Structure formats: C-alpha cells, structure tokens
Length: 144
Image 1: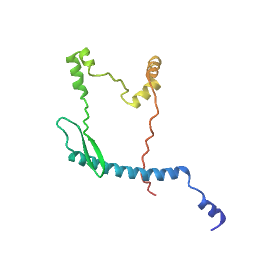
Image 2: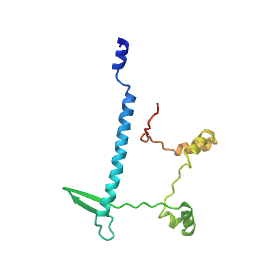
Image 3: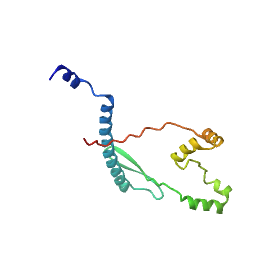
Image 4: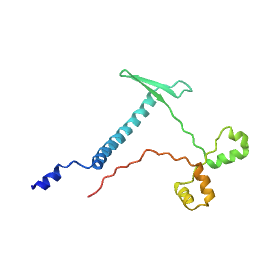
C-alpha cells in the first residue's frame, strides 16, 4: 500500500456518515423498544384493577409502582358538527366548540401566497405565525 492510500484509509469519516450511522441504529432500537413498551403497557392495563368510573389505577411489583391511565380520544365528524351548529345556534354552539382556521393544505397555501391577490396575500401573511418544528429524519438502507 502506498503512502497516499494509507493516509486516505486513516482519515476520519465525515460527520454526516457518523451521524447517519448512529441515527439509524438508534431509530431501529427505539422502534423495537417502543413496540415492546406498548405491549407491556397494554398488559399492565389488563392487570390493573380500576375502581368503578375511574381511568387511573396502579400496579406494583419489584419495588416499583406503575401508574396506568386509560386514554380515550374523541374526534368529530365535521359534517355532523356543522349540522349540530345549525340546530343548536351559534351562541350555544360557541360555548362548546372553538373555531379553528387553518390552510386546507401547505400546497394550497404556497400557491395562494405566490399567486393570490396582493391585498389578500398581505392579510394572510399578517395572520401567519411560523415556528420551527423538529426535523423529521427517516433512515432506509441504500442498495449498492
């Protein structure tokens, strides 16, 4: 092996390569452990003794207390909510529901901001609050 080849082989990996490798390993470990944790949580919920009408219980063992909370999420059929608003009237409806305005899609918003009527675009831009979110990174094997 000549000296130039030896120097190339001893060079540290670029930071991106190291981060990608570590990130993909961590992601795989987290996915595997998250799935097992979901299984454990479901089983603990089945073992917990909930008092009538309560959604929280505890399970104890190995010197540890696991607090189990049953969760229920509610979504609304938007067409049926619109009918309810008409039948209830805005005053009664507004005591229960809040109005939420959001763009139908990011593509619609981008198109509007690029090509909409200038006065309307200015109004929408004035109402926009833009915050940075956490970056999403997916890992997939690259076939050679």
